Amino acid sequence: MIIFILIGSILPLDSPLNMAIDYLQVRGLIRAGMLKPFEINAIISEIDTLIFLEEKLNNIDRRIVSLFGPFLRKGTEFYTNLSINAGRKNKELLFLNLDFQSSGQIKNNSVFSQGIRFHFSSDLDYTGPKPWKDIVQAYLNEGFIKLSDLKITFVMGRRNLLLGPGDEHSLLLSPAKEGYDGFLFLYQGKYYNFQSTFSVLDARKMRFISTHRIGMDLNRLQIGFSESILWTEEIEPLYLNFLLPYYLSQWGMDRNDNIMWCFDGLLNFFNTTIYGEFLIDDYQFSEPPAGYTEYPHKLAFQFGLKKILFEKLFFKFNYTFVDKWVYTHELRKNTYENDSLCLGFTLGNDVDRLTLMIRFLNDKNLFPKLNLEFIRKGEGSLYRPYEVERGPAYPEFPSGVVEKSIFILPGLEFYIQPRFHLNFEAGKKFISNFNHTPSTTKDENQMNIYFWWTF
Image (cartoon, rainbow, N blue to C red; front, side, top):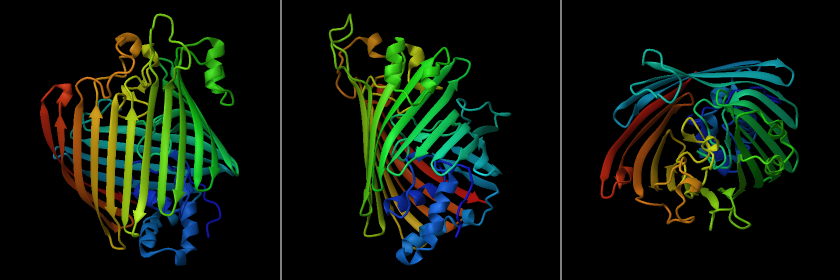
């Protein structure tokens, strides 16, 4: 049995192993924290324990656990991993990703980690790193040093972050294309935990974000409260002190920075996981500010359900709602975005989204699946706050001409062996009021095929 593994590398967000982790969490067989993407060592130590409890696993459990086999055989003092992920999306986009990760032990309880992705594509991402000869882009996804003991972990450098119970996004802080540069502090007690982050969003523009969360962990029930604050122009030492409330810190200095509050919870029972987030960007508990007859609340929430039925049917549901004024700020420099992408919900504000995924599991190698998605996107913008628009504080949701899209995508996942994964999806997307133009429709055929090979 592996007593202690010291590997610092992060499991890529698009790795097929995330499905396996999700399944094992819903089954109640492993426990992974709220912080994502997952560190490989945290998952492998849980998997290692399951191997010695094999008699308690059903056939599908054993099949899922076997997917982690290649990681169990890797060294712990120095670890390397190379993955190839290639395919075709939407009939037009050809891509190939080469992921290289390495990590190693520096001294007792300290490791380093590095992760680089070389992205080859027929349609390069011009909001990403500068391409080389319009062929390839190098994404520097991770590079950090981690110090840890039994209860405290400190990470300094670049690491991606998803702060919340959801799988794809958080209302507070969602993954960035190349992660976040700064530090991460974690404390894990018996019944409660604490985490804090500081990140430099843009050094030239002097834009920064800090977050902290205190949570209670009662095994199957986890609840927490988080704060984030985005500010510009200068390093504010008080915002680096994660033990002090950001709201009171800002109030005492009479600053106008962008603060978010978020409540989250997760409950796991009988092959079922229920989770949710409630975000408060602004809430009016007093009279409107001078010059306003009314002033809006700025609220968002998401909730989800994951359940395994009859041992073979894996069901996932998520609904996210973000009202028109969330993430906006009267000072444009404090808008809750980075590189034109929202730091919270990836679709921004004035939007709601419903997703449904059904996957049929078995002890063979082939998993049929079906993905459904429905999105309503209003005319609100991150860059048009209430203070500028000065319309009604509570407009109809979603506002204006609403673009609606329905996405139906059946597919097959084929795990040829633990190191090789093949995925095929084909479906259609129906869009009405395209680009918020009334009666304009658009249909898009979707066909995605890709493979993932880990060395």
